[in-house]
View 1 (tube, helix red, strand yellow):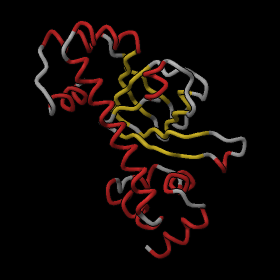
View 2 (cartoon, helix red, strand yellow; view 1 turned 90 degrees about the vertical axis):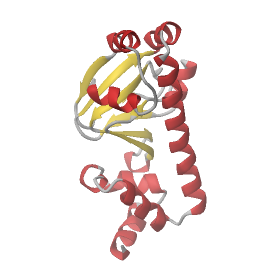
View 3 (cartoon, helix red, strand yellow; view 1 turned 180 degrees about the vertical axis):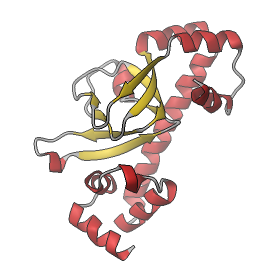
View 4 (cartoon, helix red, strand yellow; view 1 turned 135 degrees about the vertical axis):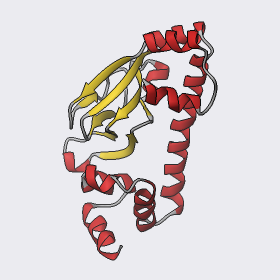
Length: 189
């Protein structure tokens, strides 16, 4: 709970009453490595804060080699199939842990109650929406403006620990190249 408090405290002071109410709605979940914890066509019912671990967001395909990885979330970040969460409609993609992952989750219903009862709820909603928007926007801009090699270098400049925990096939999909092209990029870099 201290990690999420430190994260939120960077933005605003939280009253003890709001904090106590909010944390009463959080549930800690430990998800094993390589576990899909939101499947395609399921409705996302949680926003989660990652205490430890790495989560991959991807579009599954019949051939696993053709899956499209379009996002990663890490320690001290929120993760959700946020469009599904907001609309309470089936998700068009999946969430999978790449390492054993510990998350603090709040359900859609409980978050609505936090919104109505506290000031912190709106802060959490705004922070989550802003973070997810910025990640999406940055990824789109990178795909449009940078070469595959620049995207690869940028990814590891920001998150050097990725090489240790994320399989190269997911990285190649994320930067929009084939595994063979990634291999050539890695040799040059």
